[in-house]
Length: 300
Length: 300
Image (cartoon, rainbow over all chains, first blue to last red; front, side):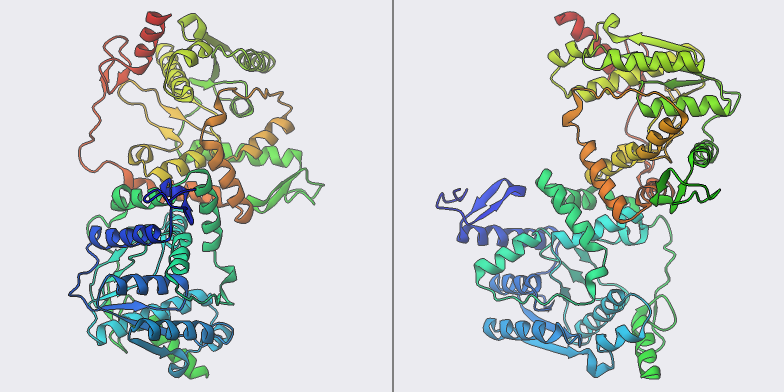
């Protein structure tokens, strides 16, 4: 198989795009998908101060590498979740990558806030993935706002996005469907959030890491085995095998034709107010993060 | 395994409903699902003259049997499509069933209209499933209207409905999504159409036939192997195995929360006019059926 651009032997086949590439041409291809995502959705410009959520996994490192390579003004934030089986490995990858790439990296240790996830899991009855996600969103948002970042970028790829969309469609969760997308605009105390990798599949971000020489960590969270998204990821992967390009068409079609149907008609029913304890935007009196912190301190 | 209602040995397990039934209780269960569909969606009453589309397959026979058993005023219409490999078998099952069940059966032979599907397939470049579906919808609708039937009932089951819904969602086909459902109201020359089996899976209609002693035909259309719905049916079946009840929740959720988002906002863009040749409602000057007939006669 030959590279479709330069005709030398290909190293990556991409049936979804009816193409195959050598190393250099794949890197051009991936870069253009990221540039297209950024421009098409007005994610940010070279004037923005971008905070990248860096877990140490392939997606966040691929994103950081690509944005740095494109010349954007980025810094990283790693949240050390305090899970003995995976957090030290993930953190080491994040730190090593940022040192080599000369990307400033900030680290927040949830254990220092009384929220080591291994403890939280023991105490809290809600699914741990939900609590952990809420905590990360809170801390990323707070850090971005308090430190003058104009946008927060995460490494969500096409598989993440389509499996989440699929889950929301299966439940017809109108609220989630109405604001799913590669950009969430800043409003009411929330930082602007963007997903510049949303056009790349997981396979493509893994290839980007491999071909760009990025040493990424594989430290799967020991708590996430029961999440339902992997089921949908596998199902969409099966569908993609039969219908190459299905995932991106499903997602692009949603953005173009589907999402508008779920936009609130008239007044929205959710009333966002500042948290009575910390000021973070919330629909309840005290936000979920503060309630979690209180619970962990009370029962600690 | 015991019947959940009467505790004698069960003959059917239904994980989606967390239950299992003996023969008699399964038949009660199936009947109630049909009654629920009819009432919940105001499909018809005992005063209606109901035309049932009878292909001779399990779904149309199960539907006819159930409606007759419930005491509704039904007649059948079988369309003999002129496909040598399958049509004679299907027709024989339809005729035998209606004779035994004392249901008046009307038969239209498309060959007599110049539209034997084996000939159409050779001449027409469009996918044959699309042409055949269009022809059947035309003839069922025309027959219902010309013969004073107030409603047209088809045997679409939950698997048909969810796989179609899934296909429409995958493409975000807003027009199809806006009017998918178990009832299409009479308007602009279209008869009212209903799907009383939409709460029963294919497995359940097959069991209904088996347990009610209905001798149904298995004469798969030789032309339908390339249709994409079977892919989605299999995929949803896999999902149902993992998440029992997923299919009905997906469909009910769509009817409750999803569909309204796709309803036309303001004026609809499709302008329906009577066909210039036959008067059938169409968006073009001459309807698809008349164009097909003209093509087949011209080139015949």
